[in-house]
Amino acid sequence: MKSLGSQIKEARQRRHLSQSALARQVGCRQSALSMYEGGRETALSAQTVGRLCEALGLLPPTEAELAAARAAGEGVGEATRVFCPNAACPSNLPAEVGGRVALVPRAHAVGEGEIHCAWCGEVLERACPECGAPVNAGAFCARCGTPYLAEAPRRADPARAEAAVRLMAWAGAR
Image 1: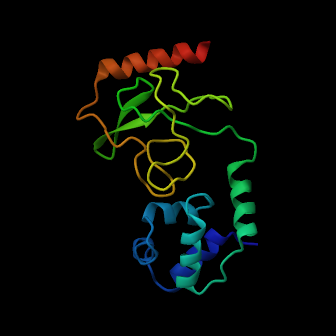
Image 2: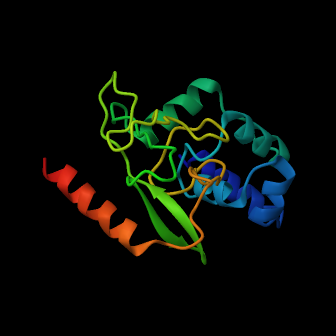
């Protein structure tokens, strides 16, 4: 049986719609639609999936079907990803992404009760500040495309990047 993402892709192509056009029509980002079509079940909210199905004349999945697909895609029992929202924290590394500097948050290994960054003491974020989606790897939310840290430095500071790499290597060796 084909995944819903594959069904959406086929229906979109039959209607000769680009990902960008369909994304604008239903109110999501093209990149999130691309990820969903490619099999990342957590890239879009249930509401957006419903709007896609409606726009393409597909039968929308039930909440139970969506939950099962997300659980299979995320891996039940994985540790929750969190990140430090403090742009000045050494755990956030500057990196050039698409011609601009973005801060890539380092995933923190936290226990159930830990809520503060080990480097700067800031309260850790457990979800995208824009859409509330669970935190994924990388600098940008997979669901809405928003950068996790909006305050990127004007230019990458090599000394800060090097210090952060050394600090993370030290923390990983402990």
